[in-house]
Each structure stands twice: as structure tokens, then as C-alpha cells.
Amino acid sequence: MEIIRNFPAVSILLCLFAGILSSGLKAKAAKALNAVLISVEIVLNFCALAYTIFVEAPFVYVMGKFPAPWGNEIRVGVLETFMALFFCVIMMLSMLGGAREREKEIEEGKQNLYYIMVNLLLSSLLALVYTNDLFTAYVFVEINTISACGLIMIRQNGRTLEASIRYMIMSLLGSGLLLLGICFLYDLTGHLLMSNIKEQVQILAASGSYHIPLVVALGLMSVGLAIKSALYPFHTWLPDAYGYSTLSSAAILSSLVSKGYIFLLLKIFYRVIGFDIIGENKVIHVLFVFGIIGMIMGSVSAIKEDNVRRMIAFSSVAQIGYIYMGFGLGTEAGTIASIYHVISHSASKSLLFVAASGLTDASGGSPRYRDLMGAGYRNKLAGVAFTVGSLAMVGMPIFSGFISKLLFSQAAIGHTYKMLPTLIALAISTVLNAIYFMRTVILIYTPMPEGLSKSGNREILMRENLSKSVALVCFILLNLILGLNSDPIIRLIQHGLEMFD
Amino acid sequence: MGNYLLLNYGEAVAMILFGIGFANLLLQNNLIKKIIGLNIMDTAVYLFLAEKGYISGRVAPIVVDGVQEVEAYINPIPSGLVLTGIVVSVSVTALMLSITIRLYRRYHTLNLDEISTLLKKEGL
Image (cartoon, rainbow over all chains, first blue to last red; front, side):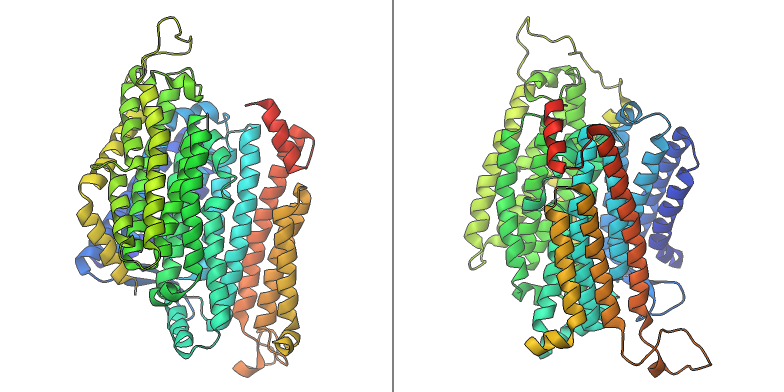
């Protein structure tokens, strides 16, 4: 059993080496390697999750020979392993769902580059989840940014190039602020390991000295990571990046890349600063306000959108707003709701992207909103999947989105002055979500009038694109599991947060 | 407040430089000027780290003449962080430059707003 303690570190290293190996392989071999790698990652992280649940205590794995205050280490608890496992599963389904599009849209001879990027992205995500060292986190944040940029620009047209440069600009602003925040914190505490920083920060907070630099450092890191995960006013790159990149990239970017940064922010809140200090800090009010504005403005932009993939992308802006609103409540219940929403949003957003591409395939490849009329009849599985994803986003019971909205409102109740704004914003945002998602669902189930049928429209059967069908079925099941069986997951999140200290 | 600022003038300069770089990266329209802004911003962080890591009267932590007392040397970690940061910044700059070249070949301009208008005309 002791051998399982090595698994998290091995999983990070395996991804890195697979990335290097892919550069010398042909496209087919790289694809096979990537599939094997993700399956192995799922097994490794599942074992780690089982182990942490079994021993009921987090463990620290020392990287290299040097012990705590000097060396580098990773820390493994229930929440970390669960998130890592979940990220791997979503990654696998996203890669499965977009296999055909990748072959079509990426130039011949450059396809193995795509798998390098995916492997490096997975390694950086796992490292962000597991690391106990702030500077290592910064380095992997940059690796994450670079590989995500590669995923956007590998499908070459003007839109993706522009989107990738806008993405890089915003991301670099964010990582500059994050780096400065980490440097401030290092100067204040003299440590880079999260647990050591926390001890020192607790001492500083108790004595009240260096209060302003501490707030500045926290503010810089929060704002930096908020910019990187596309909180509302910093989302300008997002619709183009999600709307025009190849399908797997869009699914991975929306459901994994931004969530990795959010998880790092969560770790900073709990493991670096300490949640009792965060709760009294004014920085979270800022996150709360921008979260609420994002919830509404993201949905308003989505309603105005004519391209179905860009519409789903704008809906991401709104959902990121939800997550930051939960952090902004400053209570444990709010954080649990946010983490649950990270999970449910990842599951349903990648489902929506894959389903939308199935619908556009049945409509002559046009992502235009009005061309999708009757697409639910032409591609039955994609129609059902899109409906499930939409209902989850709107927050219907039995689907995953309902649980997170329920948790958000439960967390808000009893809060002295944030209760009303939260509940009102939740209500408005739900109605707005319903407007654009239900409008699309109704449209895809409106039969095309006789004589208007376009030449590109055709029936798509389930076995025609088998990998996408499998991915869609798995996504639907995942959503139903999250919606119907939420109690164990919520208990697991609670347990994981307790282990964070 | 004021005398602290004078005492730590190196850090103050680093913060001003960071602001200049940040504003350039965010607000300039020209892509090359944006990249210059990025480099100023990153360099400002390194200046800040170097300022914080330096203790006057001590030397770089390389053992010469057998002197092994801790009091003789400065803290090596900030220098290590600066080196790591430089590696990251170089690779990011290279990536930004390569995308800029791609965009310039396609649209014959470095102005991001012009590129956006050209894209709208393309109507992809």
C-alpha cells in the first residue's frame, strides 16, 4: 500500500515524459500514447484517491533529498486526488469527443504537436492540483498558459491567431500579478512552501504587523488568477478562443484550464493564507462583486450571440462568475458550493461543446443559430445530449447544475448583507440562462418546414462517429450521477477541505 | 511613510517599472510595444527580488577561499527565483513574437485593433 504514496508524483512526471516523447512520434502513435497515458493517469489517481480516503489523512511527498523548509514537495489529500481524477476523466472524454475534428482541422504533420500540448497541459494541471510550493505553482501556471495557447492556435485561421494573442496578453498580465504577489509573500514570510508560509502568516496576522503588504499580496494573487480564469471584465479573449478552436481544445479550455487556476486560488486561500484571515479580508468582496456582475453580463452577451459555440463560450463567463461569487461569500458553505460548481460546470460545459458540434455537423457545418433548426431530429444523440447540458446549465432538478445552485443559495442564506444580492443575482441569471439555452433546445426540436431544407443537412447516426457517441453517453451519465448522487461528493469535498489545514 | 520610500528606493523603482510594463502590455495597440511592456514588467519583478535578496556587505553565495560562515553570503533563493523567472519570461516572449510574426504575415499590420477590423471584414 505504501507504494501508492508515489503515484501523484509519478503521474505528473509521466505526463511530462509523454509530452517529450510525443515530439518524436508520428500522429497515430502520439494519439495512442496520449490515450494510454490518460487511462494510466485515471488509474493512478483513482488509487491515490482510494488510499487517501482509506488512511483518512493527507500525506506529504518530498521531491528530492531536501526536507521541509528548503526542499520542494507535493501534498496529497482527498480533495486534491478527487480533482486530479476528475480532470483526467474530463480530459479523456474531451479527447474522445473531438477525435474526428482534430484529424480534419489540424494540418497533416502537425497533429503530434497537439498531443505534446495536451500531455503538457495535463501535467501542469496535475502539478497545480498537487504542489505544495508556491513558486512551482507559478512555473506550472506558465506551462499551462503556453500549452493552452498552443491548443488554441493549432487550428490555423485568423480568428484563432487573434484569439491566441489576446489570450496570451491577458494571461501574462495575470501571471505577472501572480508572480509579484508570490514575491511579496516570500519577502514577508521567507518561505515558499505553502504550509510554512501559513504558519508565518498566522503569526503576522495575530500580531497585526505588516497588515497592508499582506492584503496587497493576497489581492495581487487573487486578481492575477481571476484574470487568468476569465472573470467578467477580463473575458474578451474567451469567446473567440472557445468559438473557433478545434473541438477538443474548446472543451479542454473551458472545463479544465480555467478550473486549474481556480483550484490554485482555492489552495492559496486555504493553505497559504488561512481561511479565517480570508473571511475578514476585503479582497473577497471584490471577487464577490465581479462574480455577480459576470453572472449577469455573461448571460446577456450570450443572448445576443448568433453563433452557437460562441453562445456556449459566453455562458462560461457567467458560470465563472458563479464560482467567484461563491468564494466571495467568505464562508465554508460558499466554498463548497463553488467547488461543486467547478465540477458540475466542467462536466456540463464540455458536454455542451461536443453536443453542439454534433448538431452543427448535421446542419452542413454551420454554427449559425438559425441553421440548427430541426438538428435534434437529424442527430438524435447530440440533440438529447444538448438538452441534458442545457437543463444542467439552467439548473433543473436531477441534473448537476441544480445541486450547485441549491448549494449557492443555501450558502447565501443567513449572510448579513450578501444574502439579497446573491439570491437576486441567482434568480436573474437562471432566467437569462433559461432564455438562451431553452431557445436553442426549442429550435433544434422545431421541424424544418418542407421546401426549406438546406443541402448540407443530413441525418447522422450514432455509429457514424462512434468515439463522439461514446463520449456523449459518458458525459450524460456523468451529469446524471452528479445530479442524482451529490451527497457523497459534497461530503468528500467537505472532508477534503478539513484536510486542507 | 516617506522615509521608508527613500530607504527602499530600489523596491519603489521596481514597482514603478512594473506599473509601466503592465500599462504598456494592457493598453498599447502595437504588438511589439506590448511585448516590450511584458519584458519591462517581468524585469521589474526580478529587480524587486534582487533588491530584497541583497544584504549589503555580503557577497554572492559561491564559496571562495574556504569561507563557510552564513554571515558572509546573501540568500541564494531569490537569485534562483530570478533565474527560473527569466527562463519562463524568455519562452513566453518567444511564443508572443512567433504569433506576432504569423499575424503580420497574414494581415500586414501590427495594430491589434486593425487586425480585429480586418477579421470582421473577412467574416469567417
